[in-house]
Image (cartoon, rainbow, N blue to C red):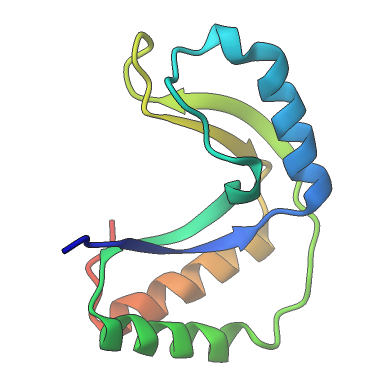
Length: 122
């Protein structure tokens, strides 16, 4: 049986995904990744849940939906790009955004709802 890992994330606008994809395309040779994430999968992780039982996942989704349904959109600005892991074999390519109180507030709400549901988060 395959265990799926779950997370809450902010979807990126199409233009941002296209920018990142073009930037990566010009520099793929600079990074030793065997494969790259598809641009449609670019996102900002708010909370990584790991494996989750269906009932617990559904409860967290409902709590998060309730606290975020009144949130409105806001602007983020890309800040930096880099990798996680050893330089010769990094595991993850990431893009950072400038500090945002709106994003921080949403991440804290999502985090709190997940912890209240019973998830142990880092």
